[in-house]
Image (cartoon, rainbow, N blue to C red; front, side, top):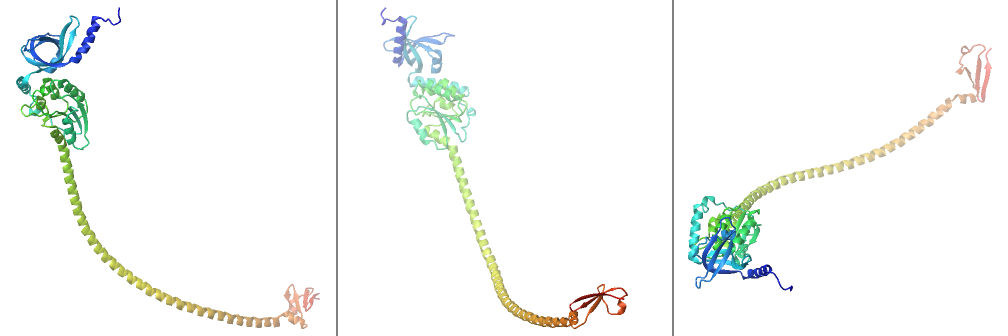
Amino acid sequence: MNSDVISVSKYLDRLNATLKTERAKIVGEISGVQMYEGRTYLYFSLKDSVDQSTVKCFMWKNDYRISNVPLKDGMQVVVTAFPNIYKPNGGLTLQVESVELVGEGALKIAYDELKKKLDAEGLFAAERKRDIPVYPHRIGVITSKSGVVINDFLTNIGKFGYEILFVDSKVEGVEAIKDLLSALGTLQHKDIDVLVIMRGGGSLESFTAFNNETLVREVAKFPVPVLTGIGHDKDIPLVALVSDKNVSTPTAVAHLLNSTWDDALSRVSLAEQKIISRYESKLREVGFTVENAVVLMEKKFTSLFDVFRQAEQTVLYSTTRIDSEIMRLKDFISRQGRELVRGLNDMKDRVGQYLSQTEKTIELSNPEQQLARGYSIVRSHGKIIRTVQDVKSGETLDIAVSDGIIHSQTI
């Protein structure tokens, strides 16, 4: 078999892959709606109102629920779909991704009906609305990354250290519904203080996604307060009505988020001015006190300097007296020194004379001098004998003469 030959199934797969690129928005009239209980899909036909051309359509029920357009025969709608060949029978069908009403009139009727329904449930009640946090820090933002909306918001948001978690989403027409739901799911479990949803102005038709029941209910149950900037001159989008706070423009959203920070900054500036004013007042008071203290200190120092000058004069006078007294004592000591030297010299002379005289007297009184003249000295047992009674018979006598000692004995 030729390698270029493929099976019917593979050919249909290839054809369907190619047909997906033929996605289009198609307007027509609904007919033959077939919705089966327990099944995840439904069928209907879309008919051209001019020449009655008809194409069969297939739609998943989840996409149908999200589109939130109850299909009825004869209804004019716009579907977003791409062609698909159903392989079991080879029939061509349009796989419908979304359905939207045609014309402002139909959209207005659907808007009013859904608004009345949700209002009856209390979704728009003031008592269920939450306050936008004071001093928000972490902000979740859902809008399109293209266009002026995000630029206006970022240009006007203050420099207060915000952390912005941005999720890009379509915001135009029915195609935006799934994107917006996905963005809500992304931010639902993030740690944010407030959620911001924004888009620019437009017709009621362009706001289709923001009047979608599924999206409105998701916004209503979002875990943190929701701030919207999707105002509309005539009919406020239902997402704006169910949000906790709605303003008309992205710039207004930024200003609202800035408001509490601006107020805090103003209070801080006012407090700063009060502190500076009180400081300056206290500084002036302290200045006066310091000036008075300086005057008192000058007086005290002047008085103290007077005491010092008096003390200085006293010291100088005392020093002069001390100098005079030192000179007097110096002269006195000098005179006394001279007198002492003179006295010592006189005493030395007198002592010398006295010693000389005494020496002569001693020499004259020296017994040895007498011995030289023929005298002798008699001793017995070391005692000088003066009389005969001083000795006994037989005692030894020592007779000292000028040139020695004579030993003798008494009879």
